[in-house]
Image (tube, rainbow, N blue to C red):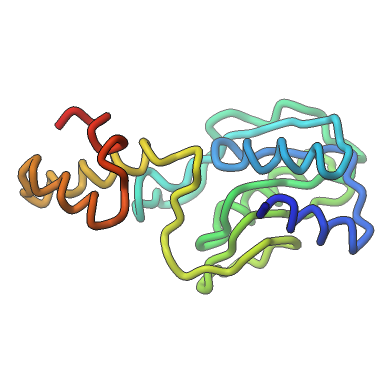
Length: 176
């Protein structure tokens, strides 16, 4: 539903990308859906790392895997899941422009109220951490690790994760 909202906004403004670039990893699913919604068959990707865990950032974004397409002269839609601080999205926009794209627009599902970078298209504004359907296990593992570092026992970690709203089945995959 969120990707469809973004697609409608893109159509309404008349932007017609030649290529969609998914920012790995969070942008894969929304980018694929946007390809269908916009009738775009060309999908490329790059992986940029800025967050190393829940609310844990590196000093600067860095390219882990470079862009896998020639964007010279193209109108490009870059897709990610969220604009939190906006630092990585600004970095990706500049990275794609530096590779010769004629135009780069950014689309995300969510923007945070505190973002310093406003994407061209988004579905909703939020002020909390989001766990997308494609990342619950990753988030649970990261949170469980932080809670254990704080000295919580396995039982306390499970209890805290349940309080947050994770299912018992998902928590049990951790094998605490």
